[in-house]
Length: 180
Image (cartoon, rainbow, N blue to C red):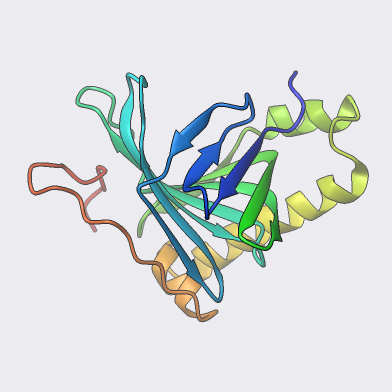
């Protein structure tokens, strides 16, 4: 079992640093009153070639849209990491709290990685206060999505959060979505 993963977002340096300390160039950072947007290429990753994420500190969520490589597509529209996000000026730190939510727009949302969460709590890698906060954030998101027909944008808009994304190239297929 691994300790909580962290990611650093250094806006002035235009880099994203993962839990292993690997620095990756960021194509775009965008700061809003409700969070930070990041968009960058995925280098040497066979499953995906682009990632864009919104860090939403008040909700304790990182909303991600992956651009999958052919043959690696996943049945998801958005991936939500339940986390703690701390801002220090123009630098942001995300600490993952193990729980994740897979969003299928207009169809459903599933809470995943509960086994990792339970193991982390049992091993003391996540203290009780952080674990309780993570559970509350996860269930607030699941409830909010359900109350808005599993429409991420509608749920967030009800809180004054409007996410905008980098457009995919014309030949780029969108993540698969089940028919309405």
